[in-house]
Length: 459
Length: 114
Image 1 (cartoon, rainbow over the protein chains, first blue to last red):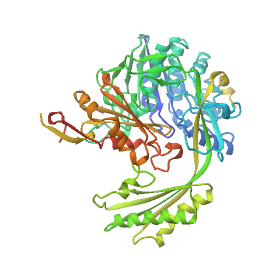
Image 2: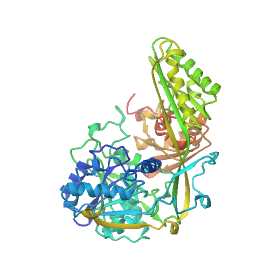
Image 3: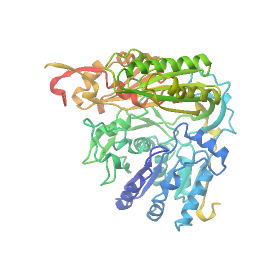
Image 4: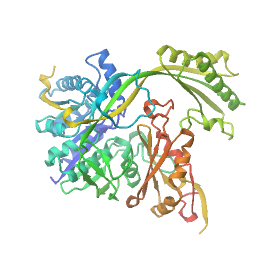
């Protein structure tokens, strides 16, 4: 019995279903095995948006759904000895810890030990201009960009240290996603920091679980082809990891979704490039020898993952405020909709050009071609299929200033009077664009710090 | 055996991911017996051509025969990626279904549905 450890996932991104962790925690408690829960809430640019929030309010800048996610499960996890780890600290892990502490006190568990891992934020400590660029963003002129955030993807070791110091909740900012699953395994099994084989197993576990429902039927179901039970209540995943190196992905009984070879393959290859070298700060994972086996309903076993020595340097992702995005949309419907839509798109692009409002502009004919199309509209311009009953025309403009982007988006609004016959349903908006660039930083330039104290002492 | 031309969607599934300005598209036949036929027909050149209108520059296919899967990496397919794209789908998450619109010829008895 004690040769198994369970790792559950409660969120796959900031914006995930907030009631998802409840059945997972219930399943872990029922199983009665040593276990941990992790929450992945931090996409590439989420931290920049959080940093902007923090500037406005020094007590903000962490996962806005944190309290909502933890409230239904915190007491159960604390009682059952199930630690919770998450990168829900985003740009402000200390404020997130204070939020968890307030929640714990309100729920009557002021003795809850909350750990915080800091050090990922290198915006004030590392000179980015001296670092190697990781993913070349060729052609991007960074001269006018303003740095918003720079965070290193830290590994599992400091998270495991927080657990070793008794933390029942571990709040982090930027960590690599799989590290959130590797850390409790490291702590439980006492894996060494250079036990590449063991760490690769943990990385596989983290990689399969880090996107939550994506391994249990989310972004998988395709009605009539890949049907899943109860898509409104997809069960989030948990894994059973054995001391012997076994790994089984499953989900709570009584929830929607499924775990089968198809769903596991899709997630195994998700955002993976070379299958022989998936880089994490803890280990390089090689899945070329992996085999999968369905072991009964909603249970898939993975075998044959290999580990290689971790990369020398850590990845840093820097986010910049660089420009503004103006978007505007209108609809046309009924006879001759296609011709009216094409004409609308052309006139919107002409207006933006004529007024000099954007550096780049594109138009989409939603219903004909949009997400698969190019900025030049290659697909909708060459479309010769049947006319759909309705088309929505979208204008998107990148501008140097907020005012230019706003003016560009309002060109869609103006079409309510100046547009083709029957133009309707205008919407327009402006958003700041967050641009990112990744660098590689020597590990020693990213010292981490772990703070653990009881909820009653976090103020 | 008679060969029938069908969209990949009839016989395979796919998921799209991204890293910067690169797209990754997995591809798995529902029937493992079709893996060799897809290996022969779903070439790097054909997949690159699907994204030529977006300026894609290179396609690399990694084969995973043990799990009957392929992983396609398409460089410069995202017109700047989520960083810089003006596309509604800056991540390119919908692109798996562009791959699944590619046609392949498969034996009629391997079709799960017609």
